[in-house]
Image (cartoon, protein in one colour):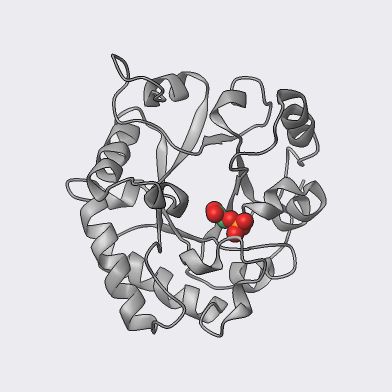
Length: 239
Ligand code: PGA
């Protein structure tokens, strides 16, 4: 039996990958189903009902469960599929026009069906900003998203937008585990959030340095979650 102490939360965000259901099922079958850390995979919505993994997450949802809303994904339908977590406010969706108001409504809808929202913040930050400027941006994103919400029931993922898909979160001095730790501490103390993840080019080479930070409760890898060897290393990394 693997040790369960200092267990972190690792959420693999597959984004719009892979292309076929066959590939998705195959990819999921290569991920260790009993890893050291609590592990969630988030395949594209289309594949959620067929991909087998002990913990599944969704990448986004709508804020209403049913009705005349073409193309949307119902939080209640996700719940019925066994989904445990759902990303909200990912930078890629904020870029596509998702507003703070939409994000707040999604967080609220997810809590009402007992799916844990994973609220992504860090959009709009740049590599030039210092810790204080970053906390200002994050504060405003959290204040809007958490209006009327019990912050202790959600997970926050700090994803500096410029580190996403960059291949190396250290490509600028700012994106260090120390910086992420300071931001995580700020989010917890100011908002009462219990779990904060780091995301943005997290991979098997840099994961340990983030996981060793006391206030970083896990990771949200994108690209690395599509590479079973790398991802299995991350989810079994003792820290
Ligand atoms: P990345 O993606 O690990 O490929 O940078 C993370 C994310 O966008 O959630």
